[in-house]
Amino acid sequence: MSDSPQHQPGQPYAQPGQPYAQPGQPYAQPGQPYAQPAQPGQPYAQPGQPYAQPGQPYGQAPGMPPATVTPVSGATVGRIAFLVTVISVGPGLLLQLAMPFLYASTGMGGVDTLPSLVNFAMFAGSVVGLVLGLTALRRSGPHLLAAIAIGIAGSTILGTLASGLTSLVYNFGSFGF
Image 1 (cartoon, rainbow, N blue to C red):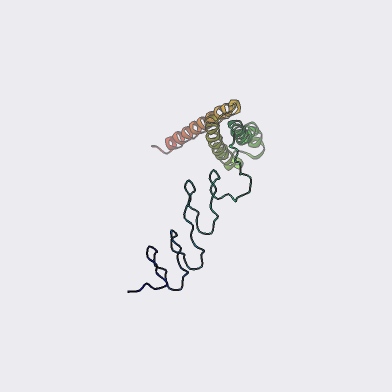
Image 2: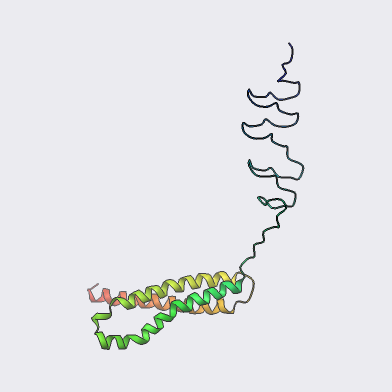
């Protein structure tokens, strides 16, 4: 039997309509160039992406400077935690100071929902501040603002929970439970 021009001994068979496979190279896919075998120490490239050079991060174009990602330090996260906590607790404290004047001017029934909304916003902001403060403590850098944020947020959360539970006990007590 004679060998056809498409098949040489030791070479894989070429598919109809595809170019001949070169020795040591896998089959080419339709519409794609021949696949190059990976060099030792060189990772495989994905279709449509250039091969990565040894020591070069995946997906970085050759000749481009390496992209640097600077991690956020604990000081920055602590500062953010402190600001979130102070901004969320501040309006609640101002409302506590203004409540006697609001009751005197509008009466007891006119200011029912405002303290509840402000207390909920204060509670939510304190939870975010507490989580950010705890995150900042796990990172390197100064921790003073993170510790202050944790203290303020923790006391605000405990105070809001205690106030809410006390209110529940008094409300259930008035219903005869």
